[in-house]
Image (cartoon, rainbow, N blue to C red; front, side, top):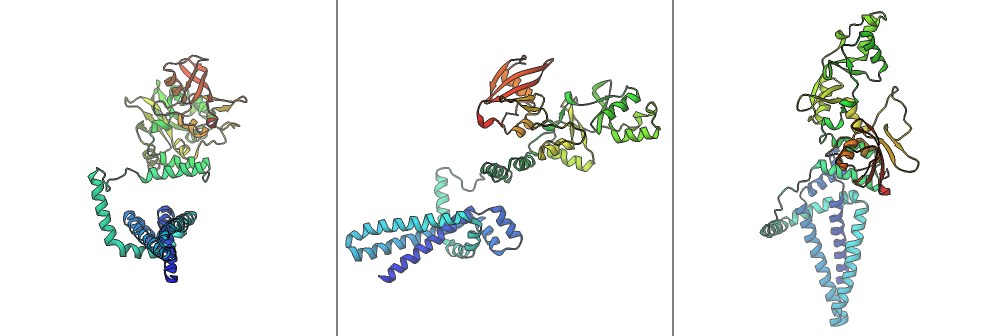
Length: 425
């Protein structure tokens, strides 16, 4: 009887090991284990090998766990029947249920979840041997299960459609929700992941906001406008702003002014204008960034499918998609959260309607739709199904919009009040 009791305790300890190993090996961070494996950790290499074939791993662990649990229950029933007779079956059922739940399920899994990586590294060598020993049985079970599932139309070999890109995005969102990653860092990581999904049209400066220079202006006036501008590179047009014929760099202008000994009228602007670079608006932001690096250029003119100018995109525009809005010593200082957005004392926000929806969402933590409109004005017009007049109000997407200002047919400023406190930014 003493040996039987000791055997039951040993079997419960083995069940503890199997349950904890199952939880640890499935919950361990794949990224951290991979990093340890790359640094030469043999146990991490074993964990990677085991988790690469999860069906085989889980099959072996469950097989071992069920064997020891059933054997422990059988021995307990035999022992208690000797002591209490037929009533021992009831006592054995109650005692083993409590023992298995507490010591072989809840306790080991709680311990494994508290430190999954270290637990997985600790048990990996032993589990690897168990997987090898049980492999004939587990392979047969896998074959049987796969065949039964195929009978009901489930293909276990089919790809589940998940990608590493989606998994990274989900991890970033989850860690931000848990508070382990602050908003700014999460936005940066999300911005990097978004580059492949964005088009140049999503991040460009629209033609309505472009600063362009007329090549027909007198040289002195052109130089004055360049020096008065906060921009380094300025497009030059001929006849119409849609006909961009060149780019003017402020540094080239300064060199030309120095060469002419300060005589602005003697500056030959046409000699320092360089050829513009045109890109289609459907170009991916990731591809455009690679081209900026390859060509050593910082600005390109964006054209639509008809060859008309839609706007311009700069290297800074793409970088801001990752790090957020940047300003330099020539930008006006802003006390608010973002240029073009101001908070009202009584609640709500007055926002420049020409701001891209993506930028507003990023700054405020909102989820305004950007699939049908690029700017905030577009969102308001789409919701109203018309060009709203000043003072007109619209409720959509869990927000209250009120048009404060129009510039001809363009919505210029909007008052936005979130309908729920959680959306108040």
